[in-house]
Amino acid sequence: MKLHIKIEQDEAGYYVAEVPALPGCLSQGKTYEEALTNIKEAIEGWIEVMESKQSPDLSRLVEVAV
Image (cartoon, rainbow, N blue to C red; front, side, top):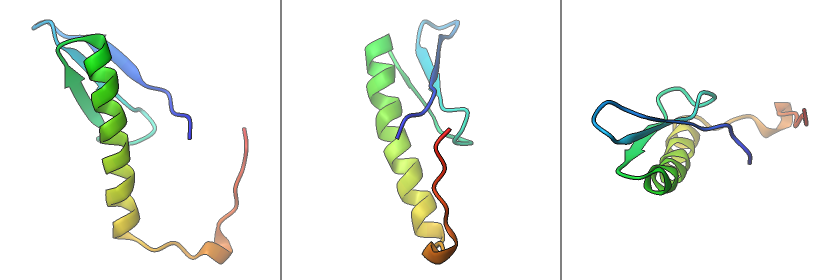
């Protein structure tokens, strides 16, 4: 899965990472690399939580490539 990630440095010097396609999926790190590692972990957790909340009807799912 490929997702766009937005990473910006805040006023305190930390790097804040956000995944616009996944509401509420945020993380941070002291360095750019740490923020990138942390957001990957946050994405995994976000997906795990969302999958546990609902069981999709697989017969109604369609995969689309854009």
